[in-house]
Amino acid sequence: MDRTAEFRALHRPGEPFVLPNAWDLASAAALAAAGFRAIGTTSLGVAAAAGKPDAAGAARAETVRLARGMARLDALVTVDVEGGFGEGPAGVGALAAELAAAGAVGINPEDGRGAGLADPAEQYAPIRAVKEAALALFVNARIDAYRLPGTGHAGQTLDRALAYRDAGADGLFVPGLPDEAAVAALAGRVDLPLNVLHRPGGPPLRALAGAARVSSGSLPFRAALGAAVRAARAIAEDRPAPDGPPPSYAEAQALAGLYRDPPGGSGPVRG
Image 1 (spheres, rainbow, N blue to C red):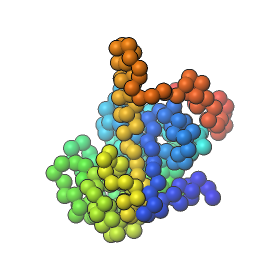
Image 2 (cartoon, rainbow, N blue to C red; image 1 turned 45 degrees about the vertical axis):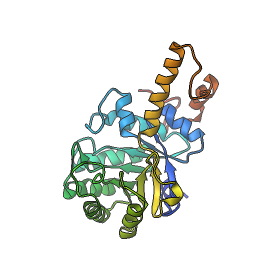
Image 3 (tube, rainbow, N blue to C red; image 1 turned 135 degrees about the horizontal axis):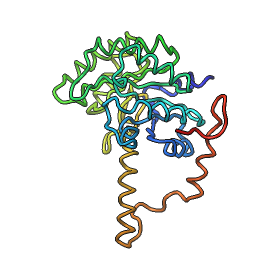
Image 4 (cartoon, helix red, strand yellow; image 1 turned 90 degrees about the vertical axis):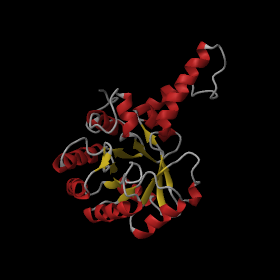
């Protein structure tokens, strides 16, 4: 089974797999070492780690560079591309081809645009462009109708889901679905794998009937920031670190050994 087919096979409605989201090569390698077969990127984490805002189209170069590095791991990589980094359909198609050539198996374009939603027709064209440029890529079309204020939620989500399915999307990502009933209802209306966003305090995985993927989103990145600050404060206040022992120096150093040489070259990815 090739890598793309393996990634598709992970999507089993009613038996969701967890997709953690990395923000740099070290976090990706640590997640792969922990046994996660598929790993995504988080646009917030990638942009913030570069000192840039999320959802502003500013982190294209960092996203592509990270995807190239992650593809050298023994893991299946899917890439969050915000709304396409402000590029039109042709540009999004070129980006998809670039990511596929680097070894990514999936791409995650979103229809949120700042405080509002893209017109469905505006989002239809980039999805078609991705499928035309890189047919094998698993297109996980993100619908932000629940996430953004003042949108139509259930009805608008279903309309967009059907439109994106017709454009060629392979799966749907709907952050903000309020409960298990909403997950099951949407999954029952659209014959595509449904991806939901983990919600701390939300329903357990076994209760998400119909979901095929659960993404961590930016939670691990934000948790790492919090842990770094707590560790620094513990040092400053001369008290034990609150989160238990971190990975050792040797364990962190060993992560570099998980990367394979890139095609046509040797040694680590630089840049």
